[in-house]
Amino acid sequence: MAAATLFDLQGKVAVVTGASSGLGVQFAHALASHGAKTVLVARRKDQLDRHVSELVAQGCHAMAVAADLTKPDDITRLFDTIENDLGTPTILVNNAGLAQAAKLSEINRAEWATTMALNLDAVLFTAQMAAQRMMAAKLSGSIINIASILGQHVQKGVAAYCTSKAGVIHLTRAMALEWAGRGIRVNALAPGYAVTDINRAYLESPAGQAMLPDIPLRRFGGQGDFDGALLLLASDAGRYMTGTTLTIDGGHTLAL
Image 1 (cartoon, rainbow, N blue to C red):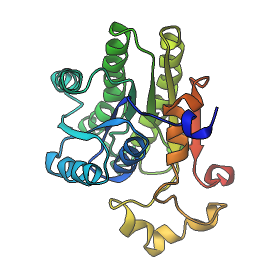
Image 2: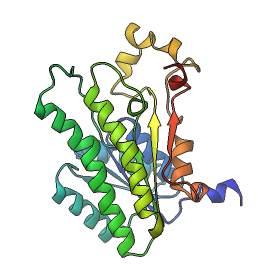
Image 3: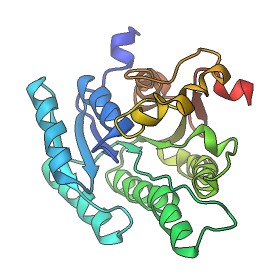
């Protein structure tokens, strides 16, 4: 089968959470440009509308839905809206997340709970809703959870983030095992450090640049560096893959 056919997402309905900025925007562009009707989800509707306008101007099919994925009612409303407007989603990219700097000797319960609520709990319950809708419609599909290399290794000062992303990796394997029999594949991506609008200033600072010698490819991730892996997992090109975590970090973890 030709590569263009393997990676074709025409007719698919895809959902990308955390799509108002950063990697979420890039993931949405990658899916939409390969034919998926792509739903961008985040809390900031104005940002979502701007990105949707860009995609539509490029000839893509995209829509925005504002939702707080830490709220069960918002998750239900999100999927009701998508099914009513586009049909049942069969691709979900669970990208929404946050990182808060806090030492373990100082972190409080509220800070810990806030990180877990979005980085881990929301991943579970958004994927659960997606899987339930696919099962009800008797459709197969792909769920892609965005983890991190800090789910595989730890770093000082961000223990809550590291713990939540380690949980995402293990949760991905559990989902894959339980839902494989229903034709739902679940995999994870573990990105390394990537330059986005959120962290550009830091990564370009002397402190950020000091990390480059630890990355064998001697650069941070950039636009498009994650598209291939995402499309592999979302499309028929990865139809026999489930329960895996793909690390995309320029070889960074080799040096840790």
